[in-house]
Amino acid sequence: MSSEFVLFFGFSVILGYFVFWSCLHLGLRWGFYPKRIREFYDDQWKAHVPLSGGLGFLLIGLLLYLRFRHPALLIALLSGLVGLADDVTKTLRQGHGMKARYKILLLVLVSLCFFSFGYGATRVAWSFIVLLATTSATNFTDGADGLLGSVLVPVFLVLPQSGVTGALLGSLISYLFFNASPARLFMGDTGSLFFGGFLASFMLLRGQEWWLILLCLIGVIEVASVVMQVVYFRLTGGKRIFRMTPIHHHFQKLGWSDPRIVTLFTGMQAVACTLCWVGWNWPW
Image 1 (tube, rainbow, N blue to C red):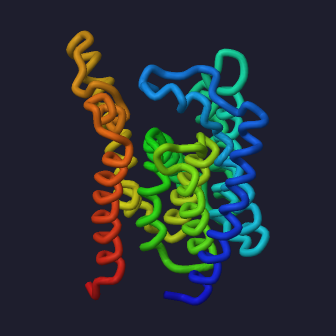
Image 2 (cartoon, helix red, strand yellow):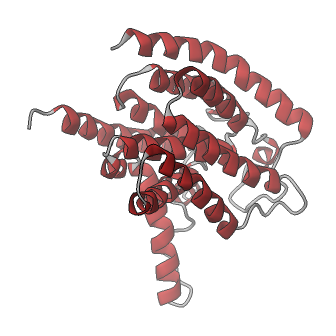
């Protein structure tokens, strides 16, 4: 384990605690809550948990970018800003959030940054597809207390060790102090798109984007459950496979607690990440 990874991990855990503590209290003061609460919020107290945690990841990401100038952090920050725009619209008026077509359009604009990395038009178009898929995966996973933060921990443990990955792992640990069940703070779309943007661009820059299927296995399952539900619903005239999607809501409807769901999904993601690590380090 590299000393830089450990140093930035430890520093980020300490800094992150104060950053997310500040985000929590600012969110409470600003009333940064979604105005429209979906029916799966059986615990109505969740309606008053602020979405301001993503601001902490933007701040930490910005500090890291100023230190390392890593291009994946630039994509992560821009993706996080797209998520922030969505979060802000959720706190205004009826709180329906940004329409999907506008979010996709903004991600297209973010993808244009790949031209600055020396990519051609075809590679940039492919990068947009990967970015959209990965941000959707992380966004759909963020729906139970501690879920996305927990499944991302094994991902950052197996990524190549550096100050950037160590600091982002540390920020996740400090965030989970506030997001573990019962959650006091949510990262919102700001945080989920930040991490989706980072993972997509990080693996694209390494030419290893196909490994995202395993690195984001839980997200892939979450997205697949939504697609299956929609297709089956239309083909059968209204029947459903799951009680609710993404699939973690199905387990919530079955009566599973959030910690139980997080334990199962994190364990599955840890196995998938172990397979990634073996694949990268096996002497083929």
